[in-house]
Image (cartoon, rainbow, N blue to C red; front, side, top):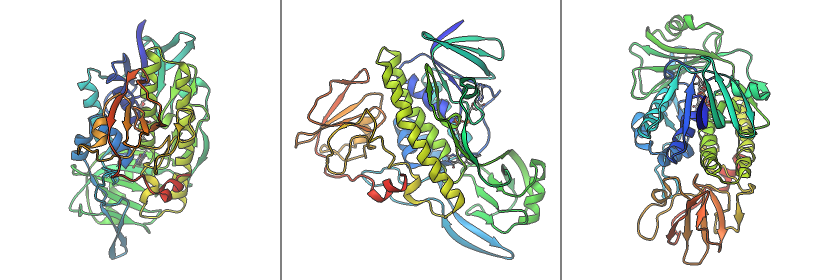
Length: 452
Ligand SMILES: Cc1cc2nc3c(=O)[nH]c(=O)nc-3n(C[C@H](O)[C@H](O)[C@H](O)COP(=O)(O)OP(=O)(O)OC[C@H]3O[C@@H](n4cnc5c(N)ncnc54)[C@H](O)[C@@H]3O)c2cc1C
């Protein structure tokens, strides 16, 4: 039986993020995926500002920025007329505290490819064509069985295996919530001859339901979405009839039923759920992929610490911190689905999500900073950028001239504000910075409210 420390099931954005975070800490892992080859579709194409900060920490931000673009403006087609409307995202300039202020469009397959490259550089590979069929757990670990008959013994198992998660089913957990809309949606990546690539084209009154064609950056493809009741084979004909343009190629297509559903446990013993395995979202608001990446980023440092002998109770804080966030984000996705507004604004950028009520957050407030908040970027007294100091697997302590010490967790959230000095945090020596923090501001209160 093959032994490893963490078996990650599912190499979507969630599983890949967790694998990178563990790999950079030197934790032995295996990452298996039932698919024979990497995913090819554009699916979750909206990367939120908070996820961009995580990608900065994980060393993939340059590739993500190169691969993507700001969201284009909508072009609404009404019979023979068309008019330009706003865009889903903002086009703000970076500030000292928010270096990535805008929603960034990258086709999901490209994001996964970039994360795969990073994982390879850290000496690990996705094992495609390996499907988990079942597992059992004992006090000492988890015994997993793959469809090939291969057995893997792991200290921990992470179910990042998407909406139809086998891990969730074996645990006996159910996704609870509701389906949205009466009919499934059709989504596809298509090449279309002579259609203007500057705009996201929408036909709101198309027969059978709204149709959209969004140009995907650095490709010749558009993401096609349709509420019309039709099958994948009908796509070229639907597009020709409604737009008058011919489809050159359908590169990928899928049908799905929008829903808001989640589990009520993220951890059972040595097994964890993350990403779509734990919560499924409608595409409105672009929250699904982002919430999964952030689950993985919350779990990674905790798993690494406990795997090296840290207290097991640290792993309980994963569910305590992430489950309420999934509930809040699902509520937001549902509101956006039911009352669509074009501009999403700050409610969806995930910068104001916080762990203020977590048992890991302690101490007093300092200016607008609270224990549990995302630490904003800042310009330090020596001219350097705070996020450059946070990058890596360690925690960071800032000592300000007034004496408060601000302890920042490895995932960028404030653990403690006060006078206590921490030599180490989660098994690694803390890095110390002495600087004032004059030039920063936290996300305004109105943004935090939007997510509560
Ligand atoms: C049209 C559309 C638009 C979307 N837009 C956005 C957006 O703009 N922003 C956003 O954040 N999200 C968006 N989403 C949602 C996003 O695509 C998902 O939330 C995201 O893919 C979830 O990532 P994941 O890694 O948790 O799961 P997945 O991406 O589903 O990956 C799960 C992986 O597990 C593997 N697997 C499954 N079962 C097994 C098994 N038994 N053994 C081994 N491997 C297994 C699968 O092969 C798969 O590779 C959109 C979704 C759709 C459909």
